[in-house]
Length: 78
Image 1: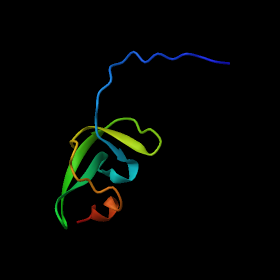
Image 2: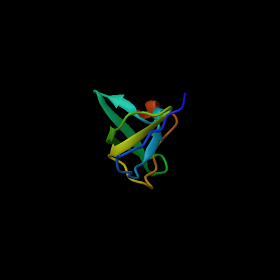
Image 3: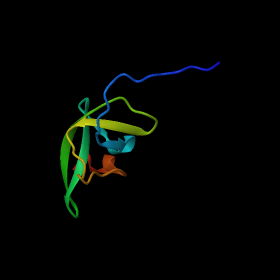
Image 4: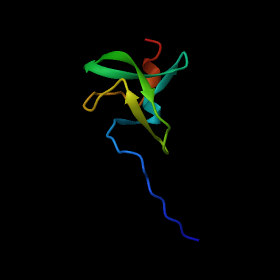
């Protein structure tokens, strides 16, 4: 069986992060941005539907932001 799918929505570029980079706090997605070596800023993000292990970020970070992608949960209680 074969099929054809046509995507009719518009395409747009957006940041995509590994799922482990997004920490849930009080029901909201949060990431940690590195401001200077060893100094981090907590930032709330709006995320889309995950695809495999990647999550599109609709708002809260921009391309070029340095986001903690491994061990972000360890910064949660700081």
